Length: 356
Image 1 (cartoon, one colour):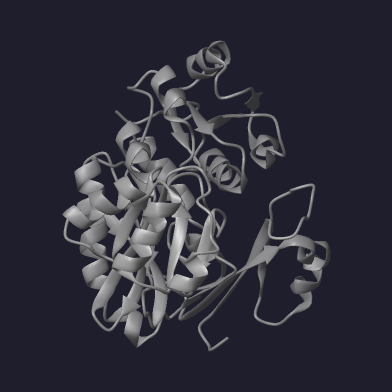
Image 2 (cartoon, rainbow, N blue to C red; image 1 turned 90 degrees about the horizontal axis):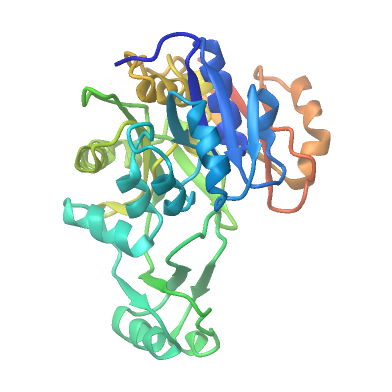
């Protein structure tokens, strides 16, 4: 049953994704309450109420849930114990999506069993197993913590077997992945409604710097466009297998052998920020529509050329200068207080029907 205007949506997490989701929810006539541990919770500025309590505070979670008609999340590292402490009928997309996405080994196994092609990988629980994985899979490769890593954190590139000897096992389960020789990186972002309907946004070409997304552009280019349909089918099967409701993102490498699955994010995604100005309905609005049981909005791209660029660290201090540049830039600053190195502070999107 669809939520009525005036209903309350709860969001787990207090970052910029929650902030933009809350803004879309307000536009649709919903109130938003947030919940996250104490910190720089920028989503709190656009919520009618915000619980700054630890993930283990069951009393606070119960009080939070009592005020919500539905509960969703803005990032995939919400502890499963939090989901278990909430009424299961309120939580959308649902526990299974987090259970799969929070562990890279589970994630690879789940999506590859649905027919995706993955880079060769192995579980690593010791220095000896790392040596064995490099010997078996080869180098170059990358060692990643199985849990909690994002934006290049918790990752170590290994160029050779000799270099692997100098890398120490970090003390928690990891995954070692073989190197993928790719021409481009892209993401498939979809929204799935409560009735199983799936809609896709166009896939951008994504460029990363230091493991963090730097820029996403449309058109994505012939190499990516030739592989999008195959990647979409993998994403659709993943969403259906999870019984997913909301926005789901799968990242891929475009290679000579077709799309290679990299990782998934059960949430709105940085590479989809362009949809705010560039699509008929943004990823944020469609996520709210989906979890509220409303009809999905159109996902068609509205401009011939689009560029979304992240604003990182101290670049945010001079971000207003972007407004003077050509190309009608749309600036989004997230309200974060500390502009430290490597921290996403905002993004700027440029849209045009002429080449940018």
